[in-house]
Length: 320
Image 1 (cartoon, one colour):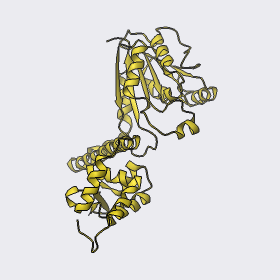
Image 2 (cartoon, one colour):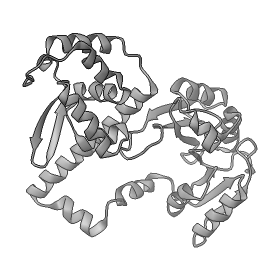
Image 3 (cartoon, helix red, strand yellow):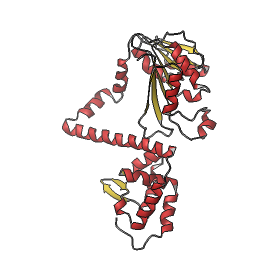
Image 4 (cartoon, one colour):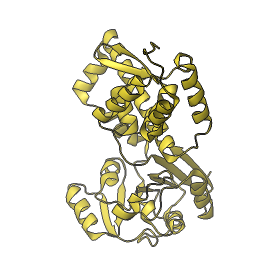
């Protein structure tokens, strides 16, 4: 790194890292070179704010930068740091405590890098024959994820538990025999009914997750999308899903998508969340206690533009 004319006092170096956002940025940039826009996405900041923090880090000689066309990329390289800065960062880094902010940063960083990979692949695809561009122009961007739902058994009955306005039911209905959409909120059910009025294989039912209005062993699969954190006793919902599932016809699976554990108390106040996400051990214990014989838990890749906590998908099966 090119050094300035004056030595930077250690107090100034510490002051720069004393801002939590800049500390998070340095932690990220030691792992990966990122553009201003990518830093903004990972830290969930306006690009102008990210640029301002990076300018402070650059002036404090914490980061190196390079330009590639119109973009500027930043990186923290320990060997390029001044000796006193290197010592400060080593001490700070060794005493960092894992927090939900760091975990969510790492998740969003993975999403940003995945986007970068896709961009690179798309570029080389166009060079090689422009197939990706042609395919998107002809067929759009979303057909792959929708088409993969065709792997679900066409004779299945699926319960969409806590269906809300029907997003999950809308995706499932074209691929299965029947969807039972359950929600305890009448306004939600009304909105879902209007949204999906053209679908003839969706049954809308009013009921709670702790007492599903569905017969025993009558559905092949159950999905619960971003609902469990609202349920006072989640284990009751797991037991109800187990009760209504049958293990025949290749089904017998329940799927939950929800938030990973986090410490954002504002979600309790503003959105009425009862639980601040769920960890892998907690989910697997509830699957076991409800009578499922096999379970899995996977953290979903972070969406760079999403502002909420990270998400996971977890499944439980009634048969091996």
